[in-house]
Length: 124
Ligand SMILES: [Zn+2]
Ligand SMILES: [Zn+2]
Image (tube, rainbow, N blue to C red; front, top):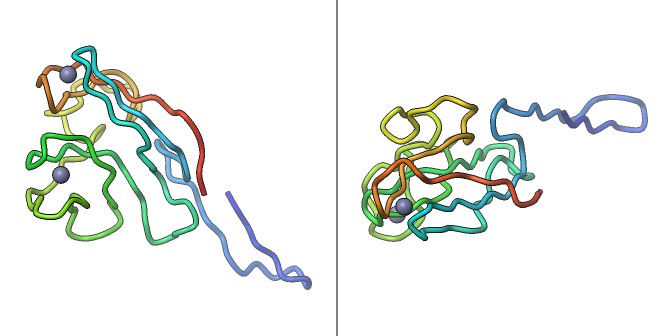
């Protein structure tokens, strides 16, 4: 939780962390088949209106970070118009519940549940 105070003690801004992916985490994803993605910037950073989350894009057959605070959900790549499916929240992608990004998930390349996410850093 982050509070910003004026000199007289007034709270001028407050940000609450969401459960699961907290604000400003960098993740990578890797599968036993060799598929991997680095630099997935997730959470919020300084942009309060954004909440980046990894998703499966059927159009590009890849894992992308999408802004789930925005409507509609969209892959950032041009011409990828299929609605991305959020990891950790959809049983087709993430059959085992162990936190949103824990456990194994569907790999966009080999289409088996062998993709795992790993936190590799922080950003803001
Ligand atoms: Zn895409
Ligand atoms: Zn794979």
